[in-house]
Length: 77
Image (cartoon, rainbow, N blue to C red; front, side, top):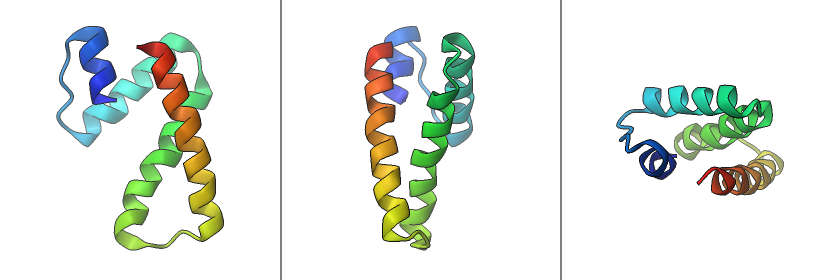
């Protein structure tokens, strides 16, 4: 996300809040609500890394979401 922001707008994102704001901006620009949902799924894995609460099934689903998210972001570059 930081790379996308920099390449598209020469903007450096430096906090989690700025990342979330940027994704919200992209959702508004693209009218792609799935992008926001995928971001939330991918972001939840950051929390799970420290807590380890998700099941294997949830992690596999998040990996699929991450792959979809990456493909969407690539198209925005």
